[in-house]
Length: 58
Image 1 (tube, helix red, strand yellow):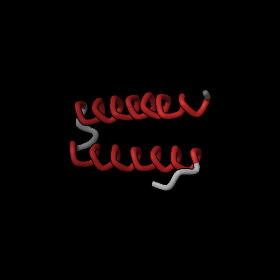
Image 2 (cartoon, helix red, strand yellow):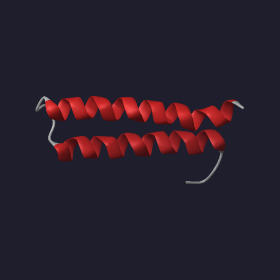
Image 3 (cartoon, helix red, strand yellow):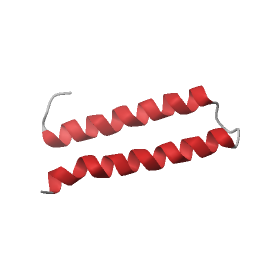
Image 4 (tube, rainbow, N blue to C red):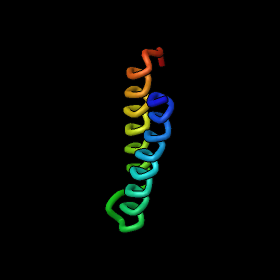
């Protein structure tokens, strides 16, 4: 049951990251391209963490 919750937690983390990046773009701290690159990096890191935890191959 616990492993079923991991993807949901990862989505929550990704949502929080995206909100933070959007706010930083809105304030002019980041460009949209910079925020997109950071979001891609965070998404890849979370995907890697999930695949390592499940033992699956990406």
